Image 1 (cartoon, each protein chain N blue to C red):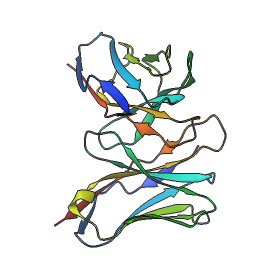
Image 2: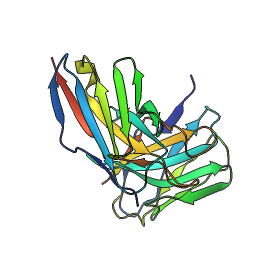
Image 3: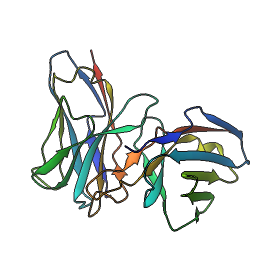
Length: 113
Length: 113
């Protein structure tokens, strides 16, 4: 089935560690996104990419990094510079451009221990 | 910047009644507005898109209205069911190409049997 796969579903990070969240899509979508959602809050954009080998910062990019080496993959690294990383992370994609309907993955929970 | 307001308090209704959720926005008028459903611990799922020149859009038991004068969208679920219980997010398109959809904080709907 076509869709967006995020892994792992649950991830624990120790203080000072970098962790990488995986996001793969087989929808042949051009644009991909990473959002962060805190409990009871809306979605905040971290990074987005419209084409391979290109990406832009969103509203809360500090402490995060991404890469887009393949059309179907858009991994997110949460670095030790992110002081409050505990949150629900959502990867998404859309057809053709960044103003279209967005399709989301199932999300990844990151907890700092 | 665009500000989107959705009622942060949960909406509790009885099964069979019509649920009405509100999305208010300030500043610019978007060309279109989208509604998403999000279940706990899952990614949002697209429901409906309504354009600025459409006053109303329907899909099965769902109805969305868009009043650009009031800067408001209403989302209705008729004959509500317990399975409709979820958080509903509205999202507005950006004023310029190259910008991102802006999401509201969502309203949680609880339908009691």
